[in-house]
Length: 227
Image (cartoon, rainbow, N blue to C red; front, side, top):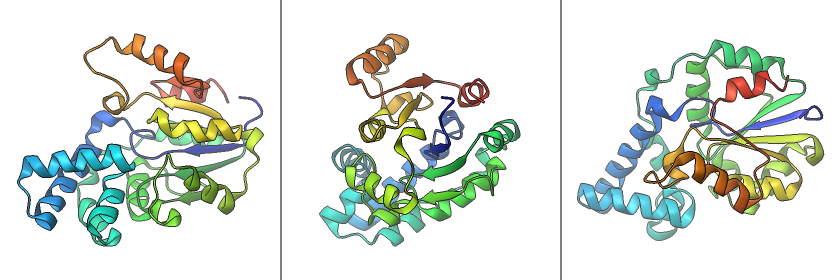
């Protein structure tokens, strides 16, 4: 990756480990929002949350299309969480600072959430730009239009750009664009069947999909080796 001068990072479960449980807290509030908004029982609300996530890319997108939910109301509600579970990662922050070129956040979350997470990680002021979901009219990755909007904002050279993501499906379009793609396997729950051998399944996905340039379960160590 010696030619990379544009480093694009997803935020949640990529710059921090999924095991900290931050997004589990968000998922709970997503379900509670649906309970209150649609007057559903807890189990039905969580089932609908999962259904919309898989059908539309985000629960929010499904709620907007199916129930005309206001995105700002939803995002304000689901991010009323305790961010203390996200621990500072000074060593990763220093490695990010030392990367040659510019660094960007490209997320399906909103900017307020990005700010809070980066503050907890001690990564404020490291990134040169951020693209949040409001900038694509709440259309989430992996839809092609989102990547087009990102490119319209930052105009990155495709041949010198790499993207890091915990959800491998979000790397398909970047690969088509000529970016190098790095699957950060922090969040296997959404990528793999947990009943099978994870390493075998990871390799199977890499072989079958064809859009994953690199894979790592340790972002810090991976970046350390490419500096």
